[in-house]
Image (cartoon, rainbow, N blue to C red):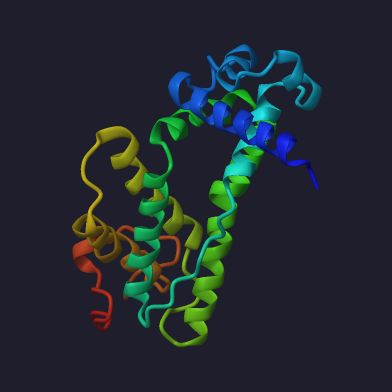
Length: 216
């Protein structure tokens, strides 16, 4: 176990990394800037990390101890709203400027990008699959839904408002995502009358609403 002084020093360095990342973005983040913010020497940083990619990854690992929780509200709709609300709350607890600063790292640093995708995407997709399997077993959800697509679409709609447009991400908006986008995708597992599996030419107006019998 690290002595308290060493552990506190590493904690200060990681905090400096995240602060610098939020203020400058990944491209302009330097070891010099982190060292100055942490009141540490650059030599100290290089003794433990080969470069800024490794330092940023360690800082993100240190600040992240969360697991993706599986909501269990008693209904599919309730679970989806709970999951989206938890996602939004988690993003707001973090510095959105820091998240924006990481976006360029996805293109600049393959190793760091792999870790970010594994943490931000793969973990959540795995949790979604676990949740869906549970709901299928309970008879609340049909098997075969494209969960990767559902996760991508719902997450993108939230991030677009939080990071790009600045429009509110309130309960009303989350309900629109669930009711108008996610639920139709989850229940879109069988072809409609007169439609082949490779033919999706029917308009949304021609398709039955979730819970309605298929039109004949």
